[in-house]
Image (cartoon, rainbow, N blue to C red):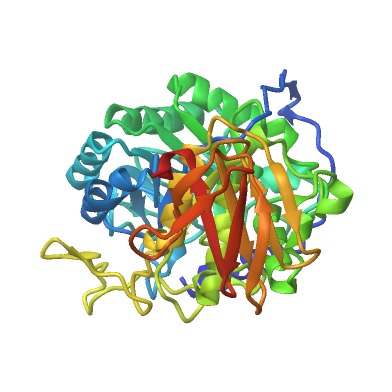
Length: 490
């Protein structure tokens, strides 16, 4: 157990320094036809990741907040039985011991009930799924009672169902080698032979089970460690027709690994959150309005293929990105990401942590602490943070939906450094002040004259007047923003 904990820590440290090369889409010598889909346009539907929440709490949040606030979907942690890892770190759920639905977030009945209630509230469920590997290479018992040993999962897999690539420890040694990345072990996790027909069938049955309960989306964990052709084959056998996002962690400034995954679904653009975060930290957010790669800072993934976020459950455990620990600056970065017409956006909802591996709040018996107590949500900076409920972030979610008819930036304005504003045609307008000084400007919009409510106000209707000439007076305190749209017109 301690070996796996140590190696998992090394994984996240190594991920930020990978130097990646162009790959050819080949699995076991079979060439894969990979037509590019239409990757233009952004998606107005916002996802929230309720990281490590219990299924009953997710259900309550769908009904009480997410649905009314306009969140389209919620990403939940893996639903499968997992290994029991000493200290109960967050990455425990990313080591499946079987494909039974049930772990510390709740049993199968609770999961099915959550899906039903969320769908009833107009919120889809996107389940994190682990298709690349099983547990670490050790023996143990899963949290639903399944036993396993090295490369042996009774009723599921035996030794020959896994890759044994021949490197030291069968682990990835050369992160530039696509064969090693896809066929060697990621930090000692038993790597499934996904080119095998029997392995594909097992994984397809698991996905069919999720679909039978009403799950309409999946996030494929460690997708970069699977051949794209294998992912496509598994989804085809599962007859999966829902939403797909693939975790492809390419942190370099050239998206060399990503295009081969576009035909399967969206890809996670880790670089976007890092670039947005560094721009806000440096006070150089004017570059975020640049349309050219050399001005923006890197060549972005095509908007229609990009799954973007300021921070996620991996990156917020480093100092590279803004997170809830950065307070108002993080919220401003999130407002920009939601207001800007790029990609499909996921908002992170965290819990407080002191160490990299720390799992969710739990009691003395290691049961995950509830978010809802007697029907009342318990959000606090010391436990379940719930940044998705912050007025600026929730308001920006509503703004993104309201301006979906104008998938472009208009009338951009900057002060050359840390104050920006831009329109979404005649559908909306947003201004952000990331400086330590008051932002007092008269700015041109394309909005119809009238009185509007600031979507980002902490409470009530903070009115903003659009004059007959289309201008507004912006008077923003440091680290605040405003957003108006056609649906906030009074």
